Length: 164
Length: 170
Image 1: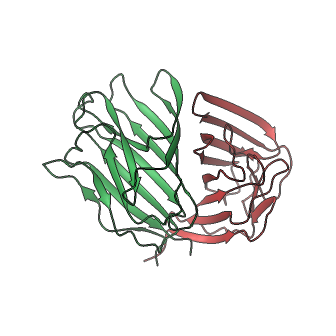
Image 2 (image 1 turned 90 degrees about the vertical axis):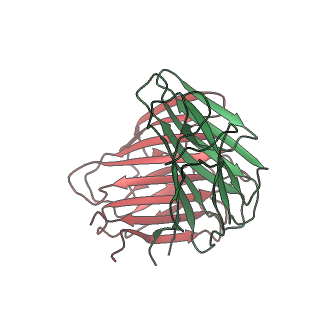
């Protein structure tokens, strides 16, 4: 039986890194799912870029809760998609992220992400992101945020989902 | 091996109801676990919470959530609650069940276990709920058992279901 939900690549960091990139993403899937778990050197909020684009071509809207208040935030014309409004990871408190990118390889539409970020020590977040480019996504970079680095042991896994 | 595969069979609660739903002897061969549930419970009110325990332990859990009920939003933080889902209760419209999905990455690893859960309850009445949970089990043991129970001491109704899936990264 053909696989519909396939691992594309996975890594567990052997040393600290300010970012991690999945490159040469094949165009043969319909959607992508990214799952990652991380500790960071200092308190940080991670973000996402596509195809090495560091321009102000990203935006996001989020709803979040920090345990005492719910909030919603929005950022436009940003240099990356912020994934962790209202929560942080640090050297002792991990965060997990689950992110989907639908129709990532089409060359007609801008690319939308939907994601969840969770850190029981600080907050929970649901987020929609937009990359204003019609290019097919062939690489995906997760940035640790600020001056932080992903700690050794952080895990990143990219899955591809086929519609047929 | 398939990447997203059901472990065991879907548990469907029978006519007598059930105090809990339990997944035991979970193999350590997957990367992440996903549980999808559909619950109705016997407690009074529009909805009740669903709690999780790992390996028979109810200790060392923390939880943070954000939620909306159609008229307001709120966020909560607890050090004892183990909430991961919702169950439509006796005050909800008949034949209506709440749904939830729990994602547990690296469940068999040697770190503390973080998990994510989304839960919804909608019954075309005044009370609807949409919850997002972030949970942490501060225990480095591999998870080999998962138990779901209603928050209040009540029973899970007939036709409630829960399914466990394993996701492999290779």
